[in-house]
Length: 114
Length: 107
Image 1: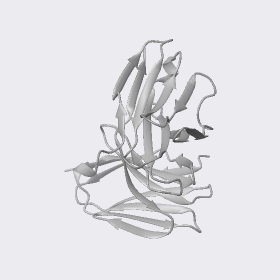
Image 2 (image 1 turned 60 degrees about the vertical axis):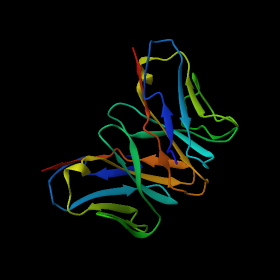
Image 3 (image 1 turned 90 degrees about the vertical axis):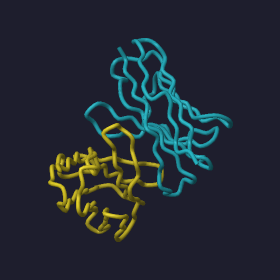
Image 4 (image 1 turned 180 degrees about the vertical axis):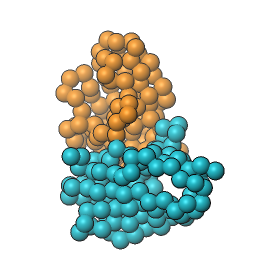
């Protein structure tokens, strides 16, 4: 029973390129959350998705960032035209239901923008 | 002022010591979470509680809803407990995180 799988573990992009971060939730989990941890800062909520639906994207920057969780396949966090300030660790978590189920976290993707 | 405040920010202890990390929150919550972030960066959920006290091995978490305060205790600390401990207050889908407490346990 694999846990939450995130890939890649490390991602290096030049300014202006696109970054795609993938998250496969635990088996049976249909709720996915993305969080960002900037260097030397705490975790911040970005977006909450259920299968094929974005439920809450209030923590996600309005431009360049998008997220999806298709019917089949992993959830994707996409950052277009990356800038140095996007360098951070991006964590995904999943839960089986929405009502205060414990979260299971992935190991994160460390994005470095050069 | 942050909505979730943790103290101390950094904590160094000798192996075997009893450790307490505190968390105060100012938002309404449906649950309070304690997370552990290992030096390699991975995050593990330790506790989720909405009242009272929970125990898992050498770890104990308590919450006082009226005072909006939670504590994480580690008994008989060990160097492998060295990590960043994060308190998070959730209200349904909305989760607010503390800045974390960096614990170092020396042998």
